[in-house]
Image 1 (cartoon, rainbow over the protein chains, first blue to last red):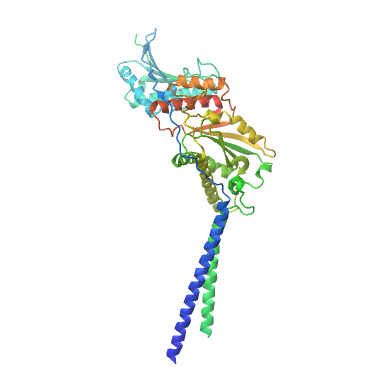
Image 2: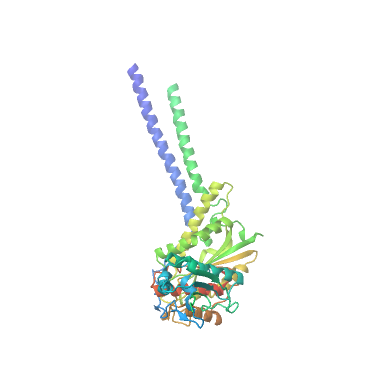
Length: 190
Length: 273
């Protein structure tokens, strides 16, 4: 009797297990079906993406600038020696952060500075575009950046005087690459 | 018998639980799409990230105009373009912006417009639940970046061309949006993706083939662009040049591109970076 009840219970449990598995499969299938239907509905609303044949435009031939970005020191009538460098070469637009790739060229002024005993004046200039106040601030900040770099190269900070001339000498509202510059002046000892 | 009924109840409870869990699992999927109107195929499916009736609202929204000078339509290049634009798309879906995209593959390739970014509707994702909103904005921005990638890859790239192909029509593109009835346009931001290294057969002011990498030359080229009205100033509209840093050319090519970027910025707008 006990064995019969036990057997019946086992059969019932097995049936329940199979039924549960079937129901679980059904629920999962139904769920996945709903997701698939919804995803298809969303995806089908998107544009038909047809890629064009892969192509790359050729790059133009560009020659290096034959003129060095930094002039050699020119001796003025008062004995000062002046080297001029384009701000476009040293800095990005409206930036006072010295570009890493400009430092190699800038290092060419170091021997002359080390061989001189007097003060070194670093003067920033901008062109006439934008507000005068902004240009003045930018010119000072750029000169200060050059000073910071010179100091990092072992030039005494006490020798270096920084100033900014802003858009002095530039035509107002005119973009002019020649005006955007930094001058490094070795003060004459004569 | 009682045990069997109890077993059926337990089985019924578990099946109900499974169905409930399944239904809950669908909620995030459903949440990814806007409820209500079905996505519109004409908008490239992008309407799910746009405001309902955005174009007829009284609220003023900014315009993000994206100009792509596509010189490489490979998947890798498309990914770089989308990555550069992603921060701007993030802001668009957060703050609400009209977005228009125009692409050119160079000379004689015509302009490619995106059905997603027509500039006629406001992209904005708002949800009552802030967590849901944050997730949906990320999802929207990602989907829009994919749209950008697809647009880049669908552009037919010509062996010659320059940024003037898209930049020359910038006024027209802004006016096309501004003149839409019922649309209230605010601040305009123009994003220009280009390496600025134009090479053309025609009389293009930004054809730099055979030129030297000098600030003075870049200045002269850009001055000529404006003097010949191939380019016009955008006044105080914000302009951003993207893509110049992605140039993998020679040092002179990179230098000239950087000088041109500066010169274009100085002349095209009072608010250019």
